[in-house]
Each structure stands twice: as structure tokens, then as C-alpha cells.
Length: 461
Image 1 (spheres, rainbow, N blue to C red):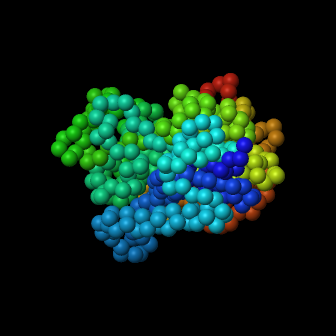
Image 2 (cartoon, rainbow, N blue to C red; image 1 turned 135 degrees about the vertical axis):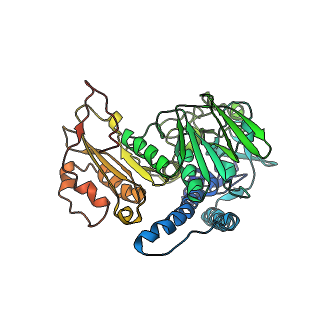
Image 3 (cartoon, rainbow, N blue to C red; image 1 turned 60 degrees about the vertical axis):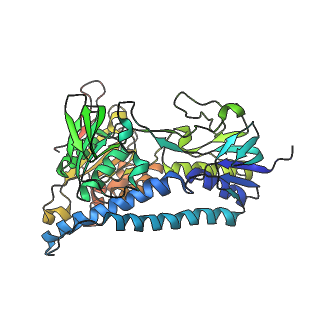
């Protein structure tokens, strides 16, 4: 059958844009639809503007720290509207860059929502479109807990366009978004409380990272409420009252839910195409991104596998090469590095201590970074390596502290290449840097012992 397109991509985020652009570059007839933000969550209401906000917060902290270095600096009130306007200009530029890349590659752009009418047929805005292959790359969306008054809170989509900075914010959640925005608002001058149900933030991360971040949150003046959950929210004029499961109540200007995300599949008409989705909306795929319908693919956060922008981008490129570039390939999700832009930031690659094999060697360093020996700020850096005792391979690296993400990117190359602890040890460090600690860790801190006491964070080491 002669279809309108060889490939139609639903969603103009990281996965969809890369897939469409590379496929069109290979000569395919490609259509792509996006009804909200070209560039997706990451560029518009996610990691890019969020990191700009982290930078804004750190400028104020830096002004205070500068006094320890002889600079008589005072941070004045932050200009929230001015900053948001500057941020929006940059995001607008990036939107244009994404559509420009697609146009130059030869893809046909639709500024509309697409939904299935059948296995090969889509309604794109008001237009019927057919395609030989279709890819779903619609990303995720924030969730609100099912509690009374949940609509009185904001979610991450809202945080980037607040007309004014709230003077008192309660973050609900202990994941990436919660700890990052807690640092942002605290750094910009807001009073911040954070509420999460786990004993420590960032479930799934290494226990030393989690313990170190909990200490850092408190050191930043953030009120930490762990082991509790939100029960209900009430309006008190323009303010909000958040009631917790332990009977306590926090009144604030803003309650911010950062309680998870779900695949964005509502209204896609998956049933019309015969595509199966899981109970939470995630679309199951095989190793080549195929759904249960062989000519329909899914990639990125809508599959709810490893929800990171670089993973989505890599998946889109691999699928384009496989379908149209005469170069079938898959990406590996092993040893994918990630970072959390909390204040201070943290980054990780490889296995955590909880997931390390029995007998693995653990090396930990914890120290005050050079900057804060003079600034006087109560901040610690934690660096950690996990080494397989049998092969001597470094199988995990974790860091909390300034420049953690930049440092971890290089370590990810080494760990992906199979570097051993001996390779690290014979590498000469750059002095004076924090990064050199990773190649000067010589004293084993402990061993993973599955038969005895479980590994515990050693926050005081």
C-alpha cells in the first residue's frame, strides 16, 4: 500500500526529534507531530530550564561564599520575573533550533496532536495521514497523589511559569524533581520544607549518596520531614495547609507535588491500532522498540524503562539507523550515568553498594571541598568506588559535591570500557582537584557482606 509517509513520529521530544531527523536524513519520507513543546519536557519544562534555575540559585550562594575570599558582596533580592523572561527567551531559541533541524533534514512538521484511527492511519489535527511505520514518543507527565485538595498544589509543569517566587514552598516527594527544586527555591531565598515517605531521599540511589544528600538538604536550611505522607490540602486564603500522616500541618504559600510521572498516552487511541499498554500506561517493547504491533514502535519515557533524555535520544538514533540506515543496532542500558542537580549536585554510574556482588570492595572518601574551607559553608563532598573483588573491575562510582556530573561523565567512559582499580591507581591525578580523589583512593573502607550485616551508609566517614 502506498502510504503518505514511510515513518510518522508522534511526539516532538528528544526521542521523536532525533528519530525523525536521522530517518529523514537517511532518505525516508517522515512526518512528525507535536502539539505543545518542540524539544519535549527536557527542553521546555524539564532538565534545561531546571538547570538554569539551579545556576540562578547558586549565584546567590556564591555571593555569600565570596566573603570568605575577601570580596564584600551582598546578594540583593532575586529578580524572579526578569530571570523567568531570560529563561523563556533561551527556551524559545531552542524550540526554533529543534524545528529548524527537522526542516533542514526534510521532515514534514505538524503542529498538532496525533491519534490513531487504525493500525496505519492517524488523525493529525484535522488531517488524515497514513504511514508504513509509526513511532510513539509522547514522553511522560507529572502525577498528583489522590488526596483531597490535590488540585490546590502545583506540579513541575507549573513551576517554570510562576508569576512570582513563593516565599514558602513545601516540596512533596523524594525523587529528582523534589530535591532539585528544594535546592532551587532555598537558594533563591524561599523557606522550603520537603516531605517524603522514605527514610532517605532518592530511592534506588547508592545509600551513601542518599544519606549525604539528606545531610545537605538540612545544611541548606531546608526542613526535612521523612517517613510521612501527605493526607490532604486545604486553602487558607491565598495560602495552603498541607496535613501529614503524622498529624502535623505545614502552612505555606505553595505546595509542590513531585510525586512521580506517568507515560503520556491519554487520547492516543492505542486501542484503535491494537497497541497494548501496561496498567500505568507504559507501552511494552522488545529490544528493537517494537510494540505488540510489529510496524508500530515506542521509545523514550512513554516506555517507562530508563527515563533519561540521553537514553531517549540514543534510542531514536538507533531506531532510525535500524529502519532506514542499513545499520541495524541496539543501545545498551548498562552503565548509563546520571546526575541529580541538587545543591550540591550528585552523579552516579554503575552499580550501587546495595546491588554489588558479595565481597565487592568499597572505597569511600568524604571531605570538605577546598572552596568551603574558606567560605565556611557546611558542605561535604562524598566520593565512592565499588570494585569487583574477583576481576578488579570498577563497577560503580558515585559522587556528591560540586562538579559531580562533569566528573562522572569521564568516569562513565572508564567504567563502560571495563577499567580496573589498578587502572585508576596508576592514573596520575590533577592537583588540586576533587576529581583526583577517584585515582588516589587506596584504603578499602569495607566489603559488601551479603551473609552478614547489610551494607549501611557511612555518612560520618
